[in-house]
Each structure stands twice: as structure tokens, then as C-alpha cells.
Length: 288
Image (cartoon, rainbow, N blue to C red; front, side, top):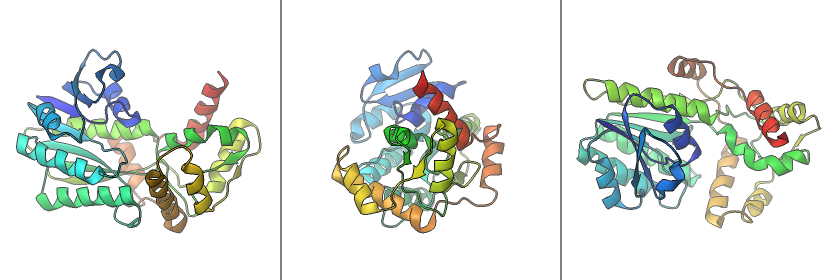
């Protein structure tokens, strides 16, 4: 039987494909050429807005990794994929959701993921919901500002347990293989995917100060100005969505349950990657 990975050319999907072995692997992508040289992966052309291509991709699949990118119709894409997976007889789903999905009610992509979670739970589907914290790798987009001495992400001072994309992929692979190798469908479960420490904007600025060898300060917490700046490099609807997310960070943070980090380390079989190590790796790559 086969595992189907959606979002295969994104940072999480690509990291999963790098790690996923011991199964027939199929990758759904709009552009198979973007998968690169992956001898053990079969590319399937299609996307989550097209039910015909999803139906074709799901034929013979027993386990599905479902990732939907931030978009105005994200909930529709995910719900359609789940419905078609159920109809195709898929007996295991790993769905990448987001931490605090039900609490950031004014953030569109969080609300979309929470709706899909409710669908999975209500239908009793055999799924693992991975509720991921803020990705460390998101901060790579702040390179120019960091080199000028500013950490511009307005994450606030409550704290966020940022997680490395590689640890997210390790958790996804562990759950995909657990469900794929089981003799029968397994019950639904929820896993909080977090980093090992809760960091504030000041904490992160201090880490970049050490990594870069120059003074880095937190940027402005003004979300109106932040959203206006985002509009220069992305659609206005996405800028608004992300500004709402950072509003949630400032209001209540993204602090995991007390045992979440320990549970994650048990699942992935190694210590969680620290933000300090991520920052040092990033700086080393910039300098080469």
C-alpha cells in the first residue's frame, strides 16, 4: 500500500519526503519537476482545488499526509481532501493543523484548520492531528532586517514555543509510519508539536545578537504598520491573516501544555532543536 504526501514541494512536505522510508510514497504536486531527484517517490500531478486529481492520487493509498497552505479557500480544500480520502478507503490520515487553532478565532487560517479538526473528530476519522507551533524557519524571511539589527516579527512578550520544521517532519513521519504499518485503523489522536522553550520577542532578539555578533533589538509591536508592510510582498488578504496571527501571539502567546515538549521528544526519538541552534545555522549559511 501507499502513503500520499500533499504539500510535497513546501518546506514541511519536502522534509517529510527526505525522511520517509519503508513504504511506497506518492507526492501530490502541481509541478512534478519541482520534486527534484527522488528515486523512491512517485510524483502525481494535481492540487487540492481539483477533486478529480485528488481522487486519482488517492487510488491505492492507505495513509495520507494532509497539508493545506494558507489561502482564502483553505478549509474547502482540506475538507474536500478528507471527504475523498474517506470515500477512497484511506485508513490513516495525518493532518497538519496549528497550535491554539480554536483560540485565535479572528485569524482566518487558524479558524479554517479548527473547522477541519472538528470535521475529523465529529466523523470519528482515523487521523492524527498535529497542532504545530510557529515555525522557526518563518524567521528566515527577516534576514534583511536582522542584518540591520532588528527582529521584525511582532511576536510579543507572552512567548511562543517555536518549532523547527525538521522536527515537525520527524513527528509527521513517525505518525505516518505508525498508521501505515498498523494492522487496522487506529483511533484519532492529537499531538501538540512545539519547540523546547517559550521565547519572547526580546529573547529572540538576544539570540540573534549572539549569532550575528551585532546588537539586534525587537521591532515595533504596531500591527497596523506591520500589516501595511506585508502588503508590499503578499496579497492584502494574506497580510491581514498574518497580522491577526501576530495579534494572537501578543495577546496570549502560543505556550504549549507542560508535557508537550517531552511528548514530542519521545515521538521523534531525539531532543528538540533549539532556536539558538537554528539561528546559528542560518547565520553560517548567510556567510557562505
